[in-house]
Image (cartoon, rainbow, N blue to C red; front, side, top):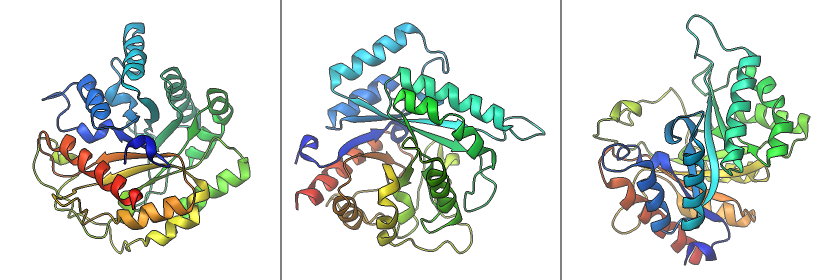
Length: 298
């Protein structure tokens, strides 16, 4: 089954290529590979993948747009940060958070993105976000609407779906009534067992997969159905798909069943976070896309 035949979009986050980036591949090489593996959606991290962020040159922007048009790629999600610990000795103010979000929204709009994930500083082990988030986001909802962008905070392990974190996001959405705010689900929340990550110069980023906050339960995929009406984007997090196209850590068949039952037609954006080894991401991304296509074809 080709990507064009799927009921939802299939994309890739450039974060997947972190180990290769700057060693064996440039950002441009990674984008070419996304198209080569048959994906149609392109997700980036603003600070990590935009040359001279936050002020890319006109030449860079023109090349970005021309390349995506040539390769048939749609910019999907722009990853940004509201780093509440940015300033030594004090927290970030609501005004500063709103200004940072505005900056990234405008750049995301200029580059053609439809979704923006603001990674906001957290205050607890279950990833409750800094209280400035509501004011910072609410002050930018009209700008997001003007730009055609949906702001979507990420539900990421160890946050579970039935949690105070998610309740706070949904209460905000109900209070504001905004169509430019929704949930991003990272499928890592459904992992069935820890992944023994190894190797690589960047292994300090994620550790070896063994560290766990206390008493984090396994999240049943059935919980996903409860928030599908509010879910606007998926980061299709995975660690390893074996030679038989089996993923022993993320229950894809169950996830895809819920996605299809809900009539979801948005994006699943692959995010490889397996072993930190050169050349591995490109192979693993192709395996995961083949696995997803095979499940939908059934």
